[in-house]
Length: 305
Image (cartoon, rainbow, N blue to C red; front, side, top):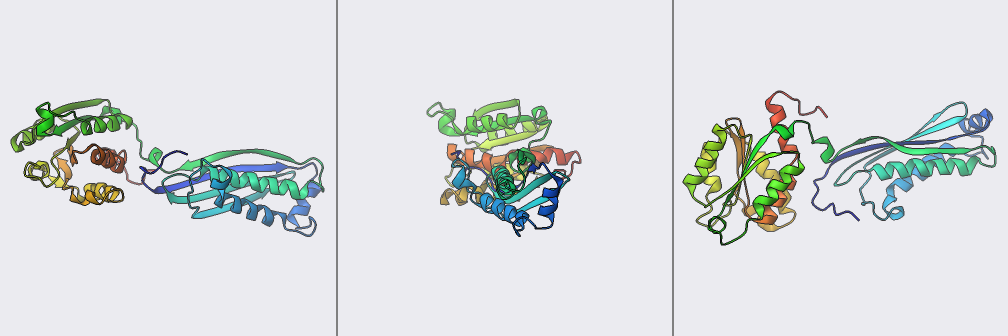
C-alpha cells in the first residue's frame, strides 16, 4: 500500500463511466417500466454500486480507505444501451478514482445479472475514468522552471564542517520535484549580519524564492526569523501557520518553530526549521501550492482550477 501519511487532505473528485448493451429494444423498455420480474433493476444497480464504492478498500487491498463524502450513480437509457456514470467526492489524502471505477463496474454487473435471462445478447461496456480532480496535480502550473531559488543553510556547526547538511538538500530536492531548475545552495553560520546580507543580495539579484533553513528555534543563536522579519515588506502569516499545523499533527514540537514568511520586494522569503524532518515536513506542507504566489503576482486567479 502506498504511504500517503505525508500528503495534505484536499478535495478530490472522480467521474467514471461504463454501461451495457442489449440485443432488443424491448429490454430497455422493460427496464424503464420496472417490468423485469417486477423489480426496479436500476435502483438495485445503483444500490450495489454505492455499496461497492464505500467498500473499495476491501476489494482492492492497495486502495486507501478514503471516506466517500458524496456519491451518485446515474443512468442514461438509449435504444439498446444503458450508460452508467458514477461521481465520487472526498476531502482526504488520496483520490476516489478507484471508488468511481468500482461503482460503475458493479452497477453494470448487477444490470447484467438481472436481465441476462430476459435478453441473451447483453454485453458490458469497458469502465473508464472521464474526470479526475484534486491533489498535487491541481497545484502544478507551467512556468515554475523559470523561477530562480536560493536555499541558505544557517548553521554554525555545518558551516564549520563539523556536521553534514541534510535539511538544505531535502529542500533543494523538493524544489526540483516542483519543476524548479535554477536553484542556488549555500551554507553560512548563524550570524545575523550574514543572514541579512544573503537575503538583501538575493533580492537585489532578482531571486524569486529565498529559503533559509535553520535558526528558527529558541537557542541563543537561533536568529533567522528575528533578522528576516524586519526586511519583509509584507508578511504572510498563513504560510507558517500552515507549516506548523502540518507539523503539529506529526510532532508536538512543531509549535516551537518561530519561522516567518513574506515578500521582500518581489522575492518570497521563508525561514524553515533546520532539522531534516522539520524542513521536509515544511516543504510537504507548503509546496507546490505556495508557488502559486508567483502566478498571482502577475494577475492569475486563485480559482482558475
